[in-house]
Image (tube, rainbow, N blue to C red; front, side, top):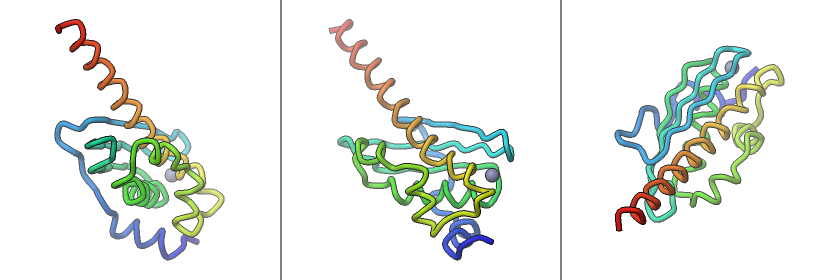
Length: 132
Ligand SMILES: [Zn+2]
């Protein structure tokens, strides 16, 4: 049912955990199987220097979270924003049709973490301007 790559990322997920004091946090949920995915990122020079995830969910949700952290690490924020849910599913050699909704979380959570980062830096920039 699952491809070898899905099984590999499910049984041996990469970048599990949470970055302390992250630059951006994204959390999304999926009502269909109750998956919850939380992605934290650390940004340096416009690139994703580190990314970690915590996912409570089915095998497909865990495999796609693991895969997107590998795909996003080292990328610029612009490049990371172009990562799509279907690109993640393709990188895993596909997902069973019944599990495609789970893969829809991974890119969404990453994109949310990036917009959280943008929101924070914008606020910080404004605060600096007001203060200075
Ligand atoms: Zn699921």
